[in-house]
Image (cartoon, rainbow, N blue to C red; front, side, top):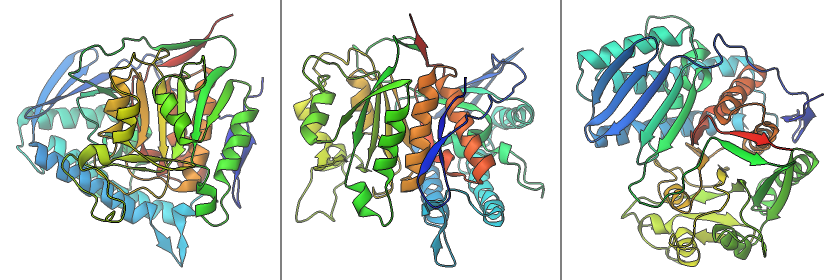
Length: 430
């Protein structure tokens, strides 16, 4: 049968078109797996294939935080807000980037990515050790011809691994496949100390269409000139036979969703899709720009938006406590925070741990705030592809990043990060 994907069209919006073929790979089981575990002194790397290789990378948390903040801020300033001849390149409705800009941006991005790679393996901001250098060299060699299954275990959502660029600084032309997010299956496996978290496997089982709760901030279309991203997504998502959409826009509905009761007699769907604004705060941080309407200090001051206004994380926790029974359907949460929220390193440090404590199986989030048109197209297409049940979550993420890169010269897919098992897949039963 003909598969369908929402794809961007010149002049704005996006339409339904044929899905790209599944990317070929040497081995469907990804025989080389890299485990990355956060430790008090840095990270431990365990490369498992025909043999096992181990390395400890010693780098203090402040250096890690500085590297993350610099990379994210630079990505946001140089690409998301890029302006050429008076045009905001990545904010335009047409998502295809001119080839000359794409090539220049790849080169600029390689500097950011190589900084990250050298920070981890070659002592750029920490201790340079023989086993870390050997691991960096080995991964660089493996990455040339292999797609790795990379699993990161951490108690916080931190390092932007998908931005890492592993090609050597030898004067060669930038290789797009040198960026980890364009080459490998990357998945964060958050580890929390809280007890009683829900256990779940790698399948979302359903009969017929996959139920999806969609949370829109309907005001977004009015906030940006010549934008109809809410209307476009509604049209696309409602036309997909693989999903059954239940839309929530009011604050009370979203609170009930977090309580696992979005509608009377219903539980939260297995997939929650948010297309909203989001702003997050660090522990101990205060928002000095909000003197007229003060918000709590720290992560409780983090907020998402609904069609009726802002919703503080503090109020979510108060009205949908973590002491409630966990989500019955262990949903996957796609938090598609589009343009308009403030960039913060560790952006979802408050909301995602809360969702995990409530029993979400994982989440998809963004490293920086995403251009509004790209976020709409990528998000709708992601939901459509994943709901078909033909590819795992990690494969869908990799495929779409590569598709927008190869077909549209667009690097914005690297903004998205997977905080869930990449092996998750939708399975339909008769």
